[in-house]
Amino acid sequence: MEDSMNRNQEKKFKIFKKKVPSNSKNDIKKIIIRDKNYSFQAISKGRNPKSKALYEKLVDIHGKTIRYTKTTFIEYNRILHVKDKIIDTYIPVKEAI
Image (cartoon, rainbow, N blue to C red; front, side, top):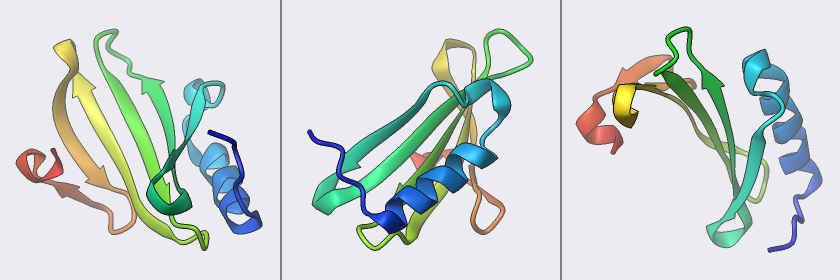
């Protein structure tokens, strides 16, 4: 699908790219989701070789951030926890899936 982000979405993408950890800046994905909303995703490798974190920001057609989470994985891609980066709180794993 064609990448056709508007100015407000582009602005949010630049902010997302600036704020994710430096070891994930070269592999950021922009995914078009329903109704021209976007999911920006970046994976940061953890200190432990078997761990990683997925940063994901959902932005609507107007450029408003709908959700911004950090999902931490441990070995075998098991979710350790999910953190809501907007309200700075952890989401119980059963609710996050």
